[in-house]
Image: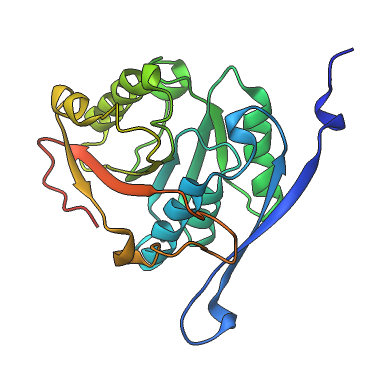
Length: 233
């Protein structure tokens, strides 16, 4: 008999993003996880780095329209929503359990009004066509499987065509020196700005009261369309 989701080990991890000057302004999140082989069911080191970047820029997020790609347990999106952004979470349409995890994360953090929809990279679905305008797109560790890279960039190209001012904030874990997305970024006409982790307080081995990112090497970058006049934050 196959294993059911209910039989899998569930846990809740807590992350606290600190505000200098006292814990009354700290931001606390609760993220439900499932110990599962699916990528989107638990928090990855890159997600904590991206969430820290979101927190660092919290003062400009109120009212911003944000879409998180490959959201999974949605830590960056949850932080953005708690900072006052209008957030939409997405993950692969063929992974309903990941979409349910997005909803569970919102419920656990008392977030209402956050939309969740299935978005398979490379597909121009009716839901994508109907998507409201966005200012910022988030994605942690979406550049994981090299065979997905062009599908992700195709989707970003479509989103940037509809939202010429938008920025893609993304963090990724360096796993191999054998692949790079630099050539693909040039092919698809994206500008890339690499963001030093030290510039937003993410250069330590432990972030937000967790044991992540640990010894993992994580990079942060911002993509914009080549013709964009927006300056990366």
